[in-house]
Amino acid sequence: MENGRYLTSFLEISVETDLNLSNLALLDNAAQGTYYHEYLHYIQDITTCSGLCKIWRAFDCLRQLISSIQPNDVIDVNAPMDNAVATEQKRHLDFLETLRGSGQIRGISIELADSYNIVEVLEEKNPLILDYYANSSATAIKLRLQSPLPETREKHFTFGENAVSETMAYLVERKFYPDLQALPRYPYKVATDLVHHLYPDLVACDEIIFSLCDASLLYNMPGWAFSQIIRRMAAQNIVPINGREVIDFAYSFYDEIEWNHNEYSRYAIQSIQFISDALYGHNYYTATKDLLQASVERGMLIRQENPYFLVDIFTQNQPLSPEFYMTFNFLGGPLSINNNGGRWVRVPLGMEALQDMADPSHFRVAWQLSKFLLEAERPCSLIRCCRSADNRNIDHRCEHSPWQRVNDENGCPYAAAWALYGFHKKDFYLNGVLIQQRSEDVLPE
Image (cartoon, rainbow, N blue to C red):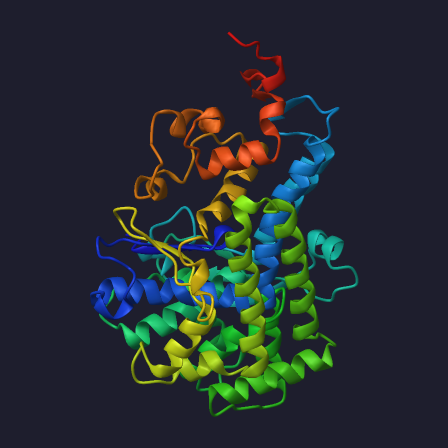
């Protein structure tokens, strides 16, 4: 059963609890542990190259799609879109899935999947990687898996960002909240298995593996980086005694391959700023955009000032330690939603003026419109969030035709974006069927 989730492309945490999420110390063990796990994903995203690139590319997908249909001479738009830009964005999404890698092993039960072990690590050249990262030596990491149980078939698992980030979050959850529901081996424990497979002589404690995950996420292909760092350690008989030594070794590895985390992070942040200016340039979005841009800037800054900050949090004896709160206060937190749709945003310290002005649900709209344009997905995923918001009425249109709310007196994030990007001035078709006649064609009664 899923107790919570973190949604990268719109920086949002959902926790399966009826409790108010505004004070972590008052949450019960289950809710606090789930939030902690998901909040770590948020930290991963705004403080590492792999995370910043995910944010950048998620927002850029919508920017590119909008740019291709905004010109006045584009009158008719059909969802799903099939122009050259849409084709390229779909291909780009396939590339991102390659970097993300596998999640759970599909087609079998979780119990059976847990019986599978790594028997071989394969490095596969992938044309998508070469297309987007020209001259890169990085490969897709494929794990060949076998089970000792009878009548089972061999499986393959793509080891990528998903396995690295989830193993890291699982380790911190297991340390501080050991009584929470057990999680499956794939993807939550597979990085630990890979360490033992590639470097069996290394007696790797949880702190070492946690730090390996953190260090690998600094690279834009975490699965490949993780395997390479371990292989390099094994070849040199390096036995780190703590997480800080792991981080230091990883930075020396990146120096050898001429990868500069700070430079690439700066480029990604500048791209996020440019794209968010384009998507959220209207005054309606100013506070929300400012929150996003400040969050990624602070994420880079905290990593520069102390590359061991997550190791320092992990090595404490309690989850809500002073080290945790130093990070929590400085970075703030994403939109957090409970079972009742109760919303809370932790703005970074010093930016309290944005507390009642920023609305990160607008980030979800970017994803929502991309899904509509690329896949013709109609239902608005903000329904639960909007139920608890002021002046937002939920009705049947939210499920079937949210674009129709564009003319409502009290709009919503979806309708605001639909109008801002000029979609109401287009004839929109859904799978060839007209669903909206452009506003200038509608005669007054």
